[in-house]
Image 1 (cartoon, rainbow, N blue to C red):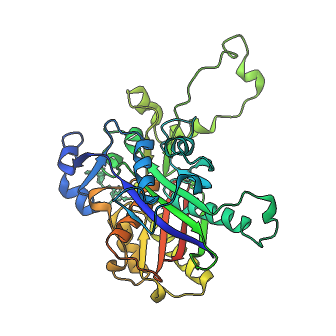
Image 2 (image 1 turned 180 degrees about the vertical axis):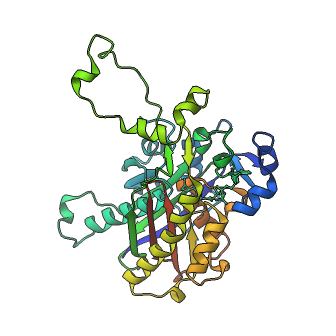
Image 3 (image 1 turned 90 degrees about the horizontal axis):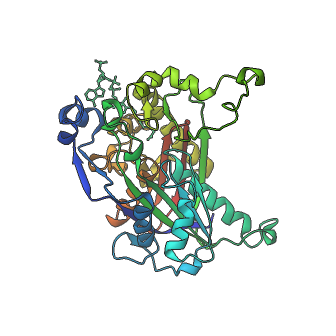
Length: 370
Ligand code: ACO
């Protein structure tokens, strides 16, 4: 209790790619994409970087811009922590969080990147809330920790970099974007009431993306026999085999692209989302009727419809944004939350649930009072 959302922002790249444009690249159609997924168009970066998008979203969440929603302006030196969730960092070093800290002059902030796939923003909020609570006055051991009163939590993605634009199974689903929220520790407000995070093994490797670290090391070429080292089978190679990636790469496909078994993810998602909502409500001692709005991860409109049906809720109780954005992984939830604030769908005192799922498999939810 006490970790309250006081600002939200979002940024999309300029280029808008409609379904018909994709049917020029792969054997697909607007009809197939929109009926199976609810997606009509998505935004794709041209020269915007992940950090460019994140910076714009963060400035709005801090109340520095007209756009977005912010209870008030927060000065840069007030931010104690930056959490930057992404599966598509511009660089490994400096981290996205470090780049944002520097660009925005957040001189007092500790800053870290994290990756919990599409559930990243949910995980980011739980980390921020936990660190704030652990350092709050009166918490056991608080004196030994960084006091964290304001945190900036970002979900930002340039997924277009890891999409195989020749693979119709995936390229129609994803888009780029960034969302951000500023949270404040305020003992007088309930703020985050409960949260729940979970991992299930992705036993079938339903969602994978190899990294592109392929700098050769010189030692085996210098006469060392790998067999003599009794090395285990490289685990990544088995994933490659499973997806016939070896053949794909040999045929000229890029290495670092996302692969997905859509139906396996679909099955996981339609159970994980209602389960996570149920768990945060149980932990807070509330029922579904106490919730004003659910802000779900936007992977497929059909997934949200299924989940709504399982929860016996009308779709109107869910904030939707997939039609003109597609799935932008960890950016979906904060961007969609920003929409809800901008549209006035969240008023002080309302209970709101954020819920997501993603590769790994990760899933989780956050219940907060606005
Ligand atoms: N256009 C036309 N046909 C297509 C396309 C396309 N873009 N993509 C696949 N097809 C074809 C398939 O090849 C298949 O053809 P076949 O029957 O001749 O073999 C047929 O359509 C049906 O394919 P399915 O995979 O069974 O289609 P499904 O109804 O399951 O829909 C979809 C696929 C939309 C991917 C769905 O499974 C889904 O949304 N899954 C979850 C995806 C998801 O949530 N991903 C993200 C999770 S985590 C994250 O956000 C990173």
